[in-house]
Image 1 (cartoon, rainbow, N blue to C red):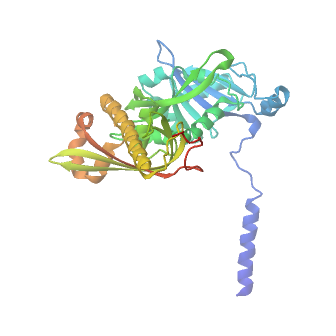
Image 2 (cartoon, rainbow, N blue to C red):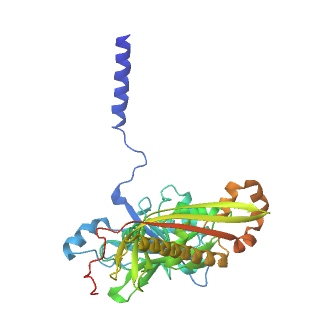
Length: 400
């Protein structure tokens, strides 16, 4: 029996070791691939075609450009090929045909598993993005975790802006999106989240807006606000404050600063958001749906520009009330904008569907008529936990 077990073990070991000596039948060598880090899609005026910009990394020049120039790789704008990347463009009527025809311009096959961002030009987003998404979901090489953004103007122009701290604009944009949690004033949407909202019966898709500021060599990218879609068409946008109002509701506020008035003077006090939690609940009373939003927020005193004592119990209570009102104001601003656009960006319809499935069957066909007048109750409880390393501010006492 022992010898039989030993033979079985030896056979298993042999099989496992032999697997490591086999090759992959469909493997492709790196020098034969054009690694795509960013994709931008714009419409072509007065035609049915779209223009696709693929930002391809130039692996051979990533190190040389840094050592020779002492900084990030060259501009790489247009199709000149300078620097650490190449913006190659092609036009056509379908995504698959466009990407297949890139072989006429690039001697390597475009490779998408490392793609970081997908940017829609504003004009194309206003016309509708649905027909351009199928390729990015169906193709086995594309990733559903890429960031989705809307350019203030053309997506192709975004990839021409040379970043200050990175060699490749697409990497800079991805890092920029990761950094947005510090303020919670920009929505962060990945392709799978955008698709889920697009497929929802009620929840409207959203995406952050990216724009170019400055001129010439002083150009820089700025991510600000949120694009609102109705079905797959861009219909409006939220500013920074309205965006954070949305993020409060959908439980996506991670950090940030709340500016409130000092209880003893007219100066401003900055309160740092430490943690936040939201809950959406629904009720149906006499066939009428109601939504209740409960927000719990905890923060610290980050800074103050006056000499008032903000650690006294009365001052803390006053600051908590100010913070609660400020949060409520942001949520109400986002709610007013979304109801005006008739775009349920909060997912209220889904909340009603989950809790009241039977009633939802009767009202889902009329949700576009219900949502603009939906009654929403907002309850906010803000708490101050700490005042940082200080009690009172660093200032001499006033003379009596």
